Amino acid sequence: MNCENSVVVAGAIHLPKGDMVGRNRHGTYLKFALKQMTTGYDGVERPSFLPVRVFDQALQERFRTKGHGDSVRVAGTLRSSTGSGEMFILAESIEDIGA
Image (cartoon, rainbow, N blue to C red; front, side):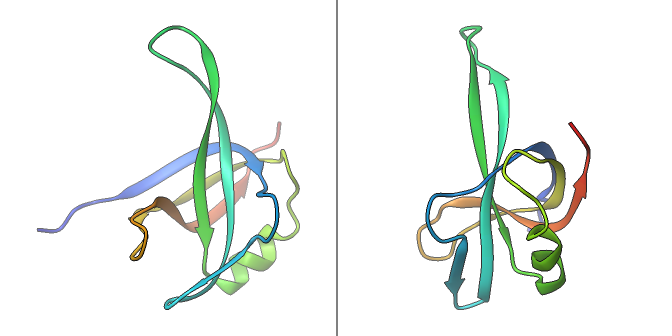
């Protein structure tokens, strides 16, 4: 069965505490999260943090010019980590969208 797992999300860059670099059998990647303010079913606004990984070297270099809180749009695919099963967005592009 082939599934379409393409996603496009926008939010503010939220940098992790500690090391942004991760490694697995597929290579070295940068990790960060996109912060989105969402309204829950109870009407209360709260932040959601969507984990993102960037494997592409050219895209990593572009991302390094960004800062915490910068607004961006990320396009990619929704994936599950081979080891932990953690869901993340595998970034294929990162675009500035301004504030």
